[in-house]
Length: 368
Image (cartoon, rainbow, N blue to C red; front, side):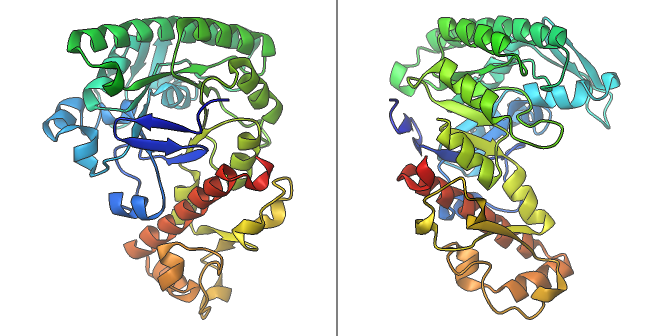
């Protein structure tokens, strides 16, 4: 079995771990101290967005990602493969994929960005990431088999080029092994087990520090592709940590942790908080013993009029700063005002809910 944590140069990521999405260098509505208070070990930033704004030269001038953001713990930088999927595959006018990488023209600008496998790694290393992710060709699970096969071919080729670039940079900079960032690759293949195996085998042969489940993890009905996700975990084996990219709902975190995944990231908990959907424990978290019973949590919709005079916290079982100090009625009032304090408090709550869930799973709760 792998170690139950990753010990990096800027701290430890305890498994399982939820990494909030700080896509453009910030988890919206909260600061680094709020994240620490919520029990967050690490965050995910996105090099695709960061290279556009504020730009790598600005990040370097500000001292790198950690000093710029005030977050002095581990940072994982995503490569931008999913963003290319979102933009290009849904609107071909926004860019294109080639064997040499991504060519993107973001909305509202005439400038085109060319992200090659080599540049993707170089930018992440220059920004100071603790975990660097190779560029991959993301697909929808229902895409034709020809599309999946092409994506696997590109993903393997890009990972090989990324591996070579990473090794060259480490040698040129003469960075000691103990101070080097880790390098992850992403396994593609859609719903084809044959392609998933082929992709995993090639990436394992190239040698990486960890791997991610690539591609959209839900079917068209919003159901988690759990069998495929679990199968991909089995292909990698227990030696390496695996990251379930885009997994963030409490139920799906538990399911994927049971399947052997150690790391998760998603914008869902923080987006839910901003939009008024708050996570609540239905009983003491210490009573979570059967993760197949989904009645252990529920949603509280803060905009509902029923909460106008509610003096209770979001959940009496929650130990977050918000629940210790503020009532549902006050949050309802802040939400109705459109005040920024609502976003901060609600985000702190949802993040603490998810990090506490991972703490329970870490100690054996939920049969994980």
